[in-house]
Length: 135
Image (tube, rainbow, N blue to C red):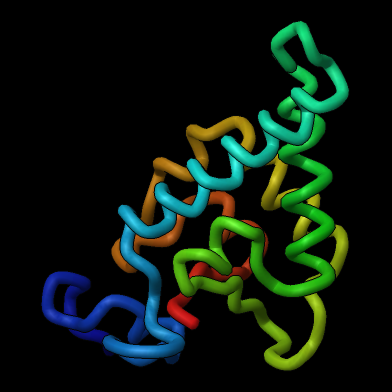
């Protein structure tokens, strides 16, 4: 039986270290990576919609950038800049396309990302069996 979540280190239930590389990323670092990705997506979409603002086209840009980079590299540009990566059930292998699509879709809704478990993982990560960890 595991001790209550207040007594065990974050990530222990997932077999992750409590500190250093491979440990769960903090909420603030995940928000920072998301913000950087959202800004980058708006800038990319703006290249195609200029001189008008990108509007909802930035959502398409965000989805394409996020899914593409998660499948190809295991991290988004924002995650890379902040030293984070996505851990998933098969270490050393690329993330399955369906996991990247479902995770990104839920992240774009935003609410699932704000509903966190005792380890601080968002609902979008729990449903796709992933976790954002320090690189």
